[in-house]
Image (cartoon, rainbow, N blue to C red; front, side, top):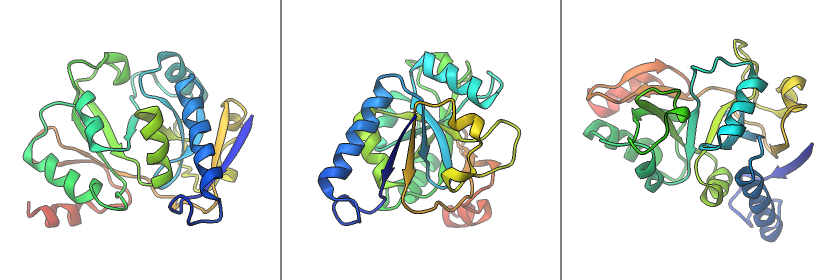
Length: 223
């Protein structure tokens, strides 16, 4: 299994030279688009990823995690323009949250459940009419997704366990041994999950509270 070490610092300003970092970004993106399954840093913990519309790779992730097939994954994007191929009918509250938590220099770990586009195959969301999307919080991951397109992200753990791996060493060996590549960040992650909010209606509904406090979000939205 290959391992690639990346830096979160803006390309060229960290300990990894610009040319070397860009080469690694292209290698990781190529692995994703060729159908590989990777362990990668997400916003706050390490996750398992593949291209969001790759049926074979998605099936592998379900088996690796021992996850029920009726439990869909979160999709990471690198730019709000990618929402156009994934979702429909963004309401005013959804647009406010996107502006406040995603369209900033360092996007916050907020996952939004939105109405799925009619053009998307049901296998992506386990035939539900909704889809869970998050802006990738790390710039280097957004750089990768710029090349690969949206990717799925699910915690690099066996389903049903409560581990939140903020370092590769915390990822179970059963998972490490069954992926094609590991992408390791030079610095440790926070180790907290993203907050998940259903925004298909006008009022946000909390699904899981993580790094962002729901009450604080409501106050900022004046709801």
